[in-house]
Image (cartoon, rainbow, N blue to C red; front, side, top):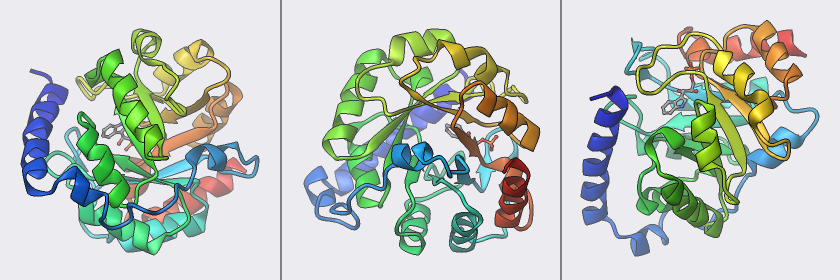
Length: 263
Ligand SMILES: O=P(O)(O)OC[C@@H](O)[C@@H](O)c1c[nH]c2ccccc12
């Protein structure tokens, strides 16, 4: 059993428990459900955008604890001030140490920036939850979803006025998963089945395979300004970065100095 299999098995249990507590009908009356979407697409298409999607991540299955000393408010407001194009907030508790409260707090502190709910989405229910939590963008991971499910979940995202980030790791996942509901395509440099890679080769290899009308982002294992420049040259507009910032005592300061080196 891969780590991804374990995460998904756990997630199915978690979602069943959540559904039993709060109905979809109730979710539509909660929190930020009525908020209009802050578009990631619009943000990335702005020529002045840094393209950086800055992630708040306390721990991961591959690294263990990354940072337990900072608050979501201080880090996310700092990311926004430094020039992030979007925030990514982990809400998976068991493997990534995140929570619903993290995304609510990030939204409250940062009303106008797009926020990606970073979790393992397997059920429509989680998309309604994400909207009530104030998220704008939903991650759909090809490694754990069939093309039919990506289509069905993508439609729900669109119907709720949010945007879908499709995550792929290789050409096979890309070819079988693209559909009309995908707003942004992300190449995860890290293989979620074994969390092995430490480079951006997957993004470099897939760049030309992604249809040119798609907005492309590169995810994970990015730490150097030169890497961002190289990815920009092959067409990437967005860069999803977590650990490089979160492993430092002041994540937003680390983002600021990275931005200074890519402009
Ligand atoms: O911390 P990194 O290497 O900068 O990676 C960030 C982000 O891409 C990574 O957290 C991620 C990408 N896809 C995911 C899916 C689920 C959980 C986490 C992820």
